[in-house]
Length: 159
Figure (cartoon, rainbow, N blue to C red):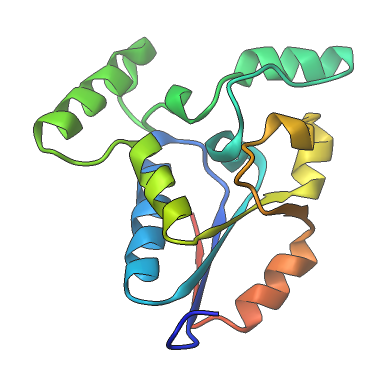
């Protein structure tokens, strides 16, 4: 556990670029302040910890994997995406302001000891296999695991 015995628990439900930026910014800030941080990725948020590979075994799972496919680099802003131009614009503006990219923020979080967990139920529904997640994912767990962590936390967020 962190030095000051404080914990932050974050549910990441969204796969939108801006919301993932917020989640990783808060996670790295909390870790930098000495807190233990866990992030629980569910449904659309799983994009943030997924490899850039297709998912799905059945017809519907494969179709879903194709339609939603991609990894964190494919995350689009929740508003003003304009068919991908919005993502390009945001990345260009962030680089000009020397703001870390989403990929860099995630890497920083991992290096700072933030624990990443995938939601077993969401993965089952969406036919996302454990081997399609990043190697840095600590485990795939149920909601009860997150509840237990949140009960011990000073901060619990839903993003």
